Image (cartoon, rainbow, N blue to C red; front, top):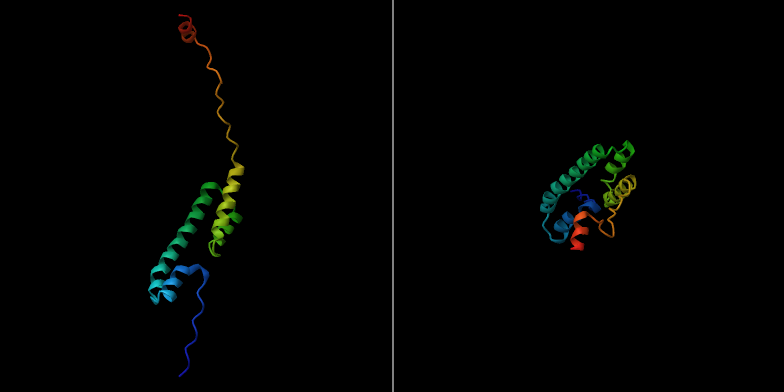
Length: 115
């Protein structure tokens, strides 16, 4: 009888499922629970990139980078920070509201002070 082939090592994107499967000894339950959750979050991220790209008018290159960042672990954090810096740079600087140090004199304040 041939020996069973070894299972491949789990990838870094499934740490929660690996913990449940290998350390907590729950078997395939972790994969069945966390697999669909991971897949759903992945699809939500892709949809968020596409919707944001349409809203902000991103170029195709930026969209491609955003979608590609969904694959390596934690690359989405880098992409989000990069885009936040770029969006802030495109917005004009907000002018602070200037308030006069002294209230201008009006007829009521002048006559009220004289009485």
